[in-house]
Image (cartoon, rainbow, N blue to C red; front, side, top):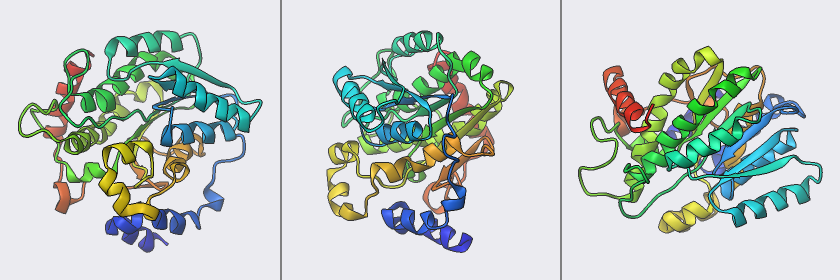
Length: 314
């Protein structure tokens, strides 16, 4: 199975589609998290008002967790909560509003969450602006949403995470990051012609490359830090931002539940996975494929980390 799994991963289309998911899932029954694995644990899910985020929330509730939905739109968040509660009448679901690209919103969100316990954070919020757009503090929006805001929020939540018996932080990346080179010296995409899909891939590359550094940084708080990508998933974001891709892939796209599977597994499986890794379909994956993006050296990773620290105000 290991050879087939690797072959699917390198084939990309087969591995990232629902075909790859179904083939791999056939070997998972003994690998599923235990029933009620998240009982007594609080799971914060950003970008939880549709698609993969809503599916992650549903999966965490199914395992007994308490879920805090984080989103920007109250009406959409209310709809997701109502749907989750209709499916599980005794589920514990709450809503917190916040824009992950806005540092003031992030700080306000962290202050509200400080009144509660936090065991797991899944950073799923995502954007793909068509034109270059800046966050309230002047950073490219994809970078702010996928990298700066999530790191800043986690830093603010470290006291609660350190108090947890099993803290886990999961970054939802994208297989598209394999096509992007780490943008040393230009994390804000100020040079070259701007393209939304390219900005998305660049920011996800930065996010993924920061995972080992963050795992080291948060080790004293005993936080398991993981990056992952969900494969190619049929979500409202794909339909809106990449309509031609969505139409071309059609039935090969994964469901939101299939895309959410690895995030739920990382949040709930025991023993907990090793920290600082990048995952897809419940298995660790390379962070780079030489033919697509080359290899990242440690000096470049640290240079970008220094820029991220400054941009995130840490």
